[in-house]
Length: 222
View 1 (cartoon, rainbow, N blue to C red):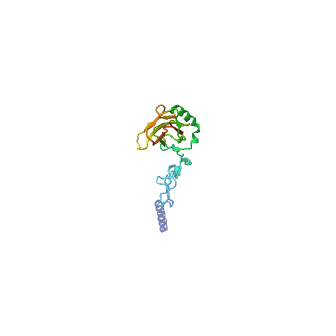
View 2 (view 1 turned 90 degrees about the vertical axis):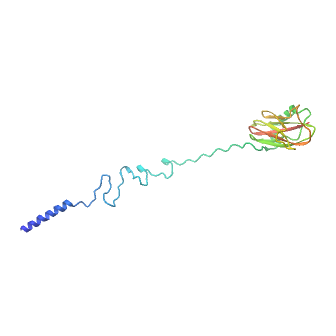
């Protein structure tokens, strides 16, 4: 009986020792919700915040993949304004019929600016100008004659200027320069008409410094 009692006491002591040293088979969790055993996975942190090295920005926001914030669609870029009309260069010749609105002005200028008895020489010279453009026309002038050139601009023309150049030999400076007044111009006004000593072609240059529109010029000969 003493042997049996000793065995029971020994068994009880062993059980107490094992109970004190043993642990639960379930891993304990820490306050941050992460497992404390090797190979475990982190639970999502509070408030949907992902770690800094994750694929998403803070606060659970999704990447915009290049689109504007708040889902706004990109707006098309406005087309640039059309370029301004070119300035300078040669004006375009047009039919003399387009000068019909300013023909009375040419006729009136011929009566007042050319010497008495002067006659119009051929049809009017007519061109369509933009600001800064010029128009050149060769006029055959005869020796011992006197010449007057009148010009007028239509609606939109800001001014008219004329110059006469010798072509044989060609000279860089004008042989004669017009007197300008607004949209009208006269070269060789009476009594100082342009006297031609020899027969030669002369180059008439018409300029429009401002505005745009039709300009007509008429050469008178006496």
